[in-house]
Length: 589
Image 1 (cartoon, rainbow, N blue to C red):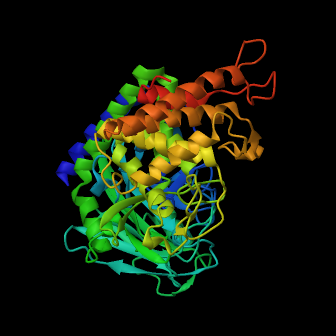
Image 2 (tube, rainbow, N blue to C red):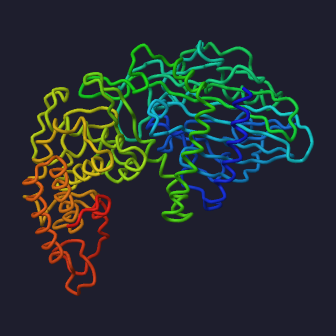
């Protein structure tokens, strides 16, 4: 515990230093709190953490509540006024800062300062930690007026965490963690229909949520009606001593939930720290054409949630150091690249991107695969033109993860036996593989040039950065070449096709789409050259150069001042962002 304390204090100092280089007062539309994957994804949509309930990424309430008692008076640090705590005002929130892996809130009230740090250890170069569906809430409290204060701190979350709708019945209990000194509590739905739901704005309703807290440090825990637990804490500084046994029952029936309370006693100017772990064991993560894939951290079937919690506890100090180091190094690079505004916005984008993905273990092939959910659209699984704009982050942090996102597409298009005889037979790359978290044979939202070029461009850059495409070459080489051949037939004018701007419908003769296809052809040439097929490389590069010359004639507006949205629409405009990969790959076309 002393090691955890000293690391937490150092961690707090680093947070203060980093916050000074980001834009002061920046408050995102949604503040990331606990963001590990599409289901363990808790956010605050408010200016202050006490304004509204926390939610899933889509705004569905997943209520977390935090209260502090200072010398017998209760104040809220998380969650709005509600039954049981309607007499507890909000602490004054001084600041919130969003770092790539952490969000830090600072509060002050009645001579006491409280900092609350939400850490999701999304460390792409340590996949064992990265894959764990476990986040941390770290608390630090101390006196700022030189006096001693009597302090108790309270946390709870309701069973809304484990259901899609609060009318669903839930169950709960406790578990022991042999490999760590933890008190661990868990909740889950009664039905436990594993991978039984898919879609966009859908929460998980299988598996179990865990809250684990070190057993030392004046801690008390209970699973109880959260309104009564909060009310008792506000009035007395205590929580119920015996778990509620009226189960199963709907999550909205007197709102059962997990509560944690620390009695810190007298606190002075020396900071006192505590932390808890919030984890979610989904048991199985992806339905791959009828076969269930385990999460990567469960790739050994003997691994259980108690192992996850023990590892999360034992690595806590290391994770504080690693997340602080990642945040510091990334922010410094972002500052050099684009200044404080760019660094501030990119710090938010980090968890927005990585929190939409899930690492799984493909036990059929005995390899790691990676899946992404298309969020706030229609919930598609592995949408290529959603993977593509996220690719710069993966290329920067760990290109292998991007490759692991692409391989399921290659397997599907190559008629891998595991794809349930879908027999995808189109000349171009697929758009999506199902609806998260279920892969199935479905009608494609075809974007022929868009998705074909996207996949080829990403593969070329992965090869450039890592020096190999193991698991791709030679297994899928003929498929990639066939996609290159498709691009030769679809360019220089892609005709009437959908592109990633599909909200506009098909965009005939789209100049930006054509540019992507042409750079994609050059990327095929690059791949051929790297694999010593010089005839192939020369042919594709010759075509790319020819099409690029024609593109400049077709896309340039009549007044020669800009390039058009569509070849046949004078005085139209679009940003030609599709040529960015030409810069990434350093390809001359």
